[in-house]
Image (cartoon, one colour):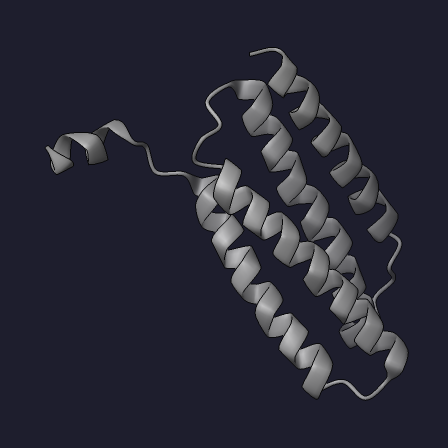
Length: 123
């Protein structure tokens, strides 16, 4: 019986990546607290970790359950948005990269959440 239930469930790349993202966020948060002396860089990495953890947890929880294409696309857009937003902040703080992709990532996050929310009304 357990084998049949397991076969009925499909693996979820979104849920897996959400778990990885949340784990990386915990490491980033620890690094921001203990390994960065510059207050601005520490704040940026902490913000990036907060967004990465929250969206990673959301992807881990919602990714395996989302069945329709629009909902999955919204979740993939969430993943893209958090990678752009958090990645830009971390890259700027640690590698002195430009943070110009952070607003693109933030906008992507907002649009993705709106699409996900409106998609829930369609069910």
